[in-house]
Image (cartoon, rainbow, N blue to C red):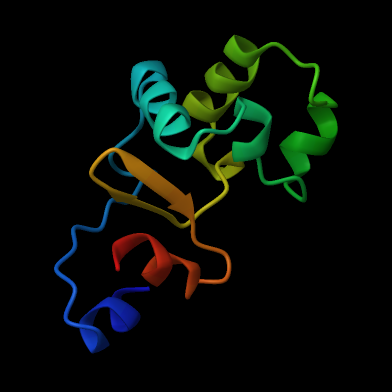
Length: 99
């Protein structure tokens, strides 16, 4: 992702969610910018996802708490630009947001 931004002359700040842990409030802000339900933030292939049996009907607060406790559940990379955000998969989707 960083290489893509550099190639396109985009200034950015990279956040490692494993070192700079998110709070529940941070996750809620991301959800607002992404305009998706909490279930949409989950990496469905993670072991913990499968063990917990998350579904789209799982309460938002339960999913948010799980993401805060285990950032590996967070689908990423997430690119934030102002009041909007996108899950950049594939990474080229990030350019759609910043252009």
